[in-house]
Image 1 (tube, rainbow, N blue to C red):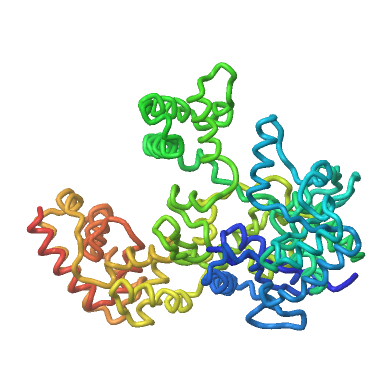
Image 2 (image 1 turned 180 degrees about the vertical axis):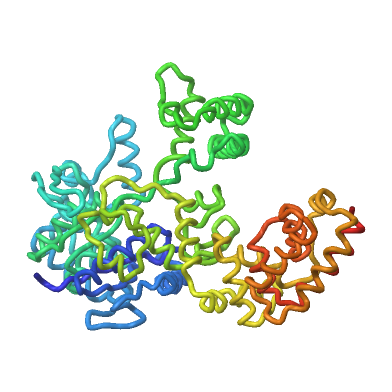
Length: 579
């Protein structure tokens, strides 16, 4: 078997969607499993949509995830350049080769002429396709003589190069989807080379994959319709095609996971406003829209059936159902993150407007190991009950054959579960170093060893990293917010001298360990015939201001004897005032 070489080839047109990260991850895992090479190639042929900061964003995102390319624009390699704009001169000879072999032709059609043709077809109820049935009618090297073509090129006329799609039934294979066939006469003659001198994705992709000796093309399902063209391009050049594997879509979350009885009204209003923004022609019927949306959301479990369009429904009802299908079901989009308050990008992205700016998994407080583990299971399954995998373990278990064909539903609650598992399993010292910048940004500057103890105390109680900030506040500041309702309910004036006595007994301990603290408090309760339900809640409130939190003995050890006694004395005096 030839050496495995795979590539992740994003376009730098904006923030890298989390689906792109999954594609990169799968390529990386397959390369590591097979002892191969993982390549990052920047496909920046679309200069109109190029965004300057996007390339750095892509590299930083992969670095944060620990998905390190073996070859890239940053690291270099023997098959560079790894940026398509730096390879511009490479492609022209391959375009010429296709023209010479008759597998491509020159087209002079202007954008206006193409629009006019489309409109003419629409008037006849047809869809225009530039292909075997229409190319003779268009302005190209088929309908022009060779002499005319050369004169027009020499005169500086704009032109593109199109692939000449053959008329045949093409058979091809995908690792995930199996054997497929397509009638190529139904496909359009794609543009391979643009008037600006740059190749389109289709040509550059094929040429680069061949020159970089890519063995497997692992990419998203959205590229599946392009596969016949790519297979034919390989054949036209006389090259052996790589193996293809098209990954399933990442779908929007199950609406039942976020549309509950409590949130239904909020989402009904959100959907109504969104619909009317998309369909201003129905603004005067807002009350009808509101009522129908509320009606559809009454039973979320049957929402799929409820959104089926019926012949006897009004145009308004049909439009609402079509809109809701797009918002609630289908491919996960960047807008889903805003709508549901969750990240759908690996890192934060600052766009030109607020609408084009997004938070990321990193800024939300996720650990990269958790994100990798979560993403790996969006479409792939190891075939075992194991759910927690390190990156090395994922690579060892990964196979393309275990990737499913169906779309994988994005479950943010599952992502948070993974993050919680990784936080709990992370060493306290590692967590403290990771959290130090977060605490400093919040105005806290604890010593590293003290922060380690706080992490050990709280890490089983948090889900994302910023949770540490809120839950650690009682351990970092004396200005506590006390639960006055619980104090009024639990505290009795006669407790004052007793708790003062407990403070003195704790103060006399030379070893302020949880075991000795526990012994001292238990002896105190027994001697004074005090129930646990009266003592522990009051101790907890005196120490943290709250009724809930970690074990009291563990809290005391982290705070230290001096701070515990100080807080107990302050709390006792405050409790008397409140009650």
